[in-house]
Every structure is written in structure tokens, then in C-alpha cells.
Image 1 (spheres, one colour):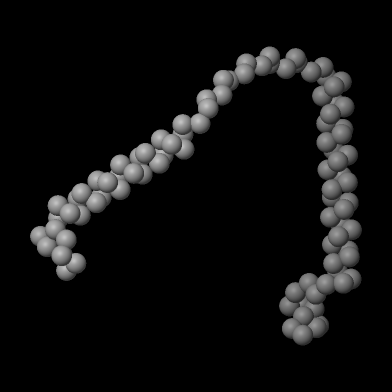
Image 2 (tube, rainbow, N blue to C red):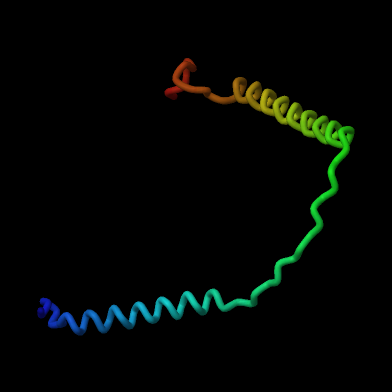
Length: 92
């Protein structure tokens, strides 16, 4: 078959084959970097009950601070920002 551009099916197949080879070579070049060896590490020791409780307290305290900061930001936003369609001057 001959296309409007004057190319035949064979010409198109040759171009596509060259494109395929070029793309595969590009992928191989990208993956040809140095191979790093995997490092085997020791499994961490089992934590005591007290250490688990201590860590959970730290997590809980941090989460409480985050919640407190969110409440403060919401309070500031209420005072200084237009919250939405319910505000009297929201559409200004």
C-alpha cells in the first residue's frame, strides 16, 4: 500500500523497527548503571514493654500538639479569613 506521503508499508515497517531498536537501546543505557550490593542488617531487638509505653507516650504527646496547633490555626482563620458562602461578605 502506498500512503499519501509516498511511503510504502515496507518503509513504515523499517522506520518503526529502527525506532524500536533505538528505544530498547535507550532503556538498556539507562539501566546500565553500577549495581549496588544489598546490605544485610540485623533484625532489631525486641523492645521491652516500658520502652513501647514510653514511645507511645511520645507519639501521643506529639499528636496532641498537632491537634492543638490545628485548633489555633482554625481560630485564627475564623478571625481573619472568609470561611465560605455563610459569611456575610464572602462574595466581595
